[in-house]
Amino acid sequence: MDALVVSKCNKLSGKINLYGAKNAILPILAACVLTSDEVQLCGCPHLSDIDDMLAIIASIGGKVSFNRGQISVCCKAINPYTIDHALMRKIRSSVFILGPLLSRCGEAEIALPGGCEIGQRPIDLHLGGLKILGVDVEESPYKNTVRCKGRPRGGIVRLKYPSVGATENLMMAAAIGTQKTVIYGAAKEPEIVDLAMFLNTLGARVFGAGTDLIVVEGKGRLHGARYKPVPDRIVAGTYMAAVGVVGGDVYIEGAIGDHLDAALHKFRIMGLDIEEEQRGIRVRQNGRVKAVKQTVTLPYPGFATDLQPLLVAALCGAEGESVVTETLFENRFRYVYQLQRMGADVILDGCNSAIIKGKSLFGADVYAQDLRGGAALVIAALSADGQSTVSGVEYIDRGYQSLSDELNSLGANIKRLTLK
Ligand code: UD1
Image: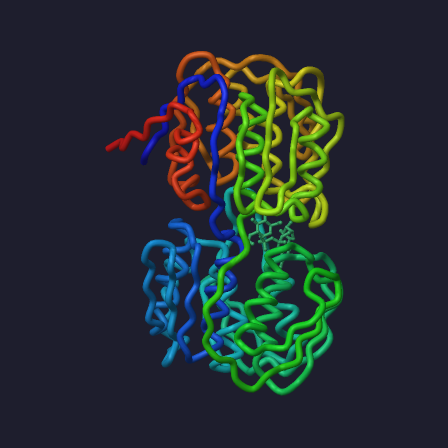
């Protein structure tokens, strides 16, 4: 397990270049299974989740390579029954492979991804949708696997909740075929729009992504392509929160303001000076930020649950009292106990609201238990008097390509230790 030793920092200044979004790249990689041609992706970060997804594709016979941000995947001949179940259980996003595998091979057996650090995360909406599309789904609770048979035939799916993963899985399941699939109640995240654009680049016919009604007209065969995934809005929000914590002047190249509307609104209430430019966003802050009375996480375009821990970290030092309510994942406040070790005045009201009274923090030994909660500890530690040690960096590596190096390039002082 590695740890980050974070020293107090006065301000951050400089420029960050955003890379492609993890949450766009993972479903796009799964979608590569839909074609027997080569797909090339550029601008991809080196993240452990991406390595794991590539290894899953390799386990079914795909040829994969990843070099300096360029990924190549070619799924010429694949065998759905050789999929690596241990890897499938390791990352949640492995479930994305189910829709494309069924579409391509007409059968698959996958290991259920199970619950994770931030909540139970069932996949009933994925499986229910596939059943409506004509797939036979047989869950094996003892083996923790699911076996599916039949090519998705098209149909009308009404999602009772706008699940990002279920919307993406169903879009991919429906992309090859001869019939039409309509998804009502679809999620509207920018990564869904990006997946639709990617599928259409392969020759698919996906309409309406970004609204709650998506139509996929099955296309017999998809071809290869070269594609650049959308920049990572959650990483952009992380650097904005970091500027909120210690102040400074940071230009985030590639950040798209429209994708961050709800977050920009909150950061502006805190007093951050945010300029949306053509190629990125400039964030400036001088002195202490102000509290934000009420924030509730919601599906897009609402305030993103993935930015919730980062916002709380930034509010820990704010002037006044803030309340942040989580509505998507039941276990998303575990990092709060770690912030308390740094002296943060954060009280959990039940399990879904945090009441934060701003005050200064002090250095402490804390540990990351999930990706965004871990990043929140690192940015909170930037303002803490003395030194903090954040262990469990492997969680942070799942979604940030060297968060410590990038913060150091802005003036932070963070050292990575490899603990035996
Ligand atoms: C994706 C993102 C994750 C983000 C989340 C919400 C990726 C790789 N991950 O996760 O970073 O936090 O969206 O924006 O894109 N649910 C069910 N049944 C299902 C599916 C979901 O009950 O079959 C529930 C979940 O438990 C959760 C809510 O729906 O409470 C939202 O989940 P979902 O939108 O599916 O999130 P993910 O796609 O897993």
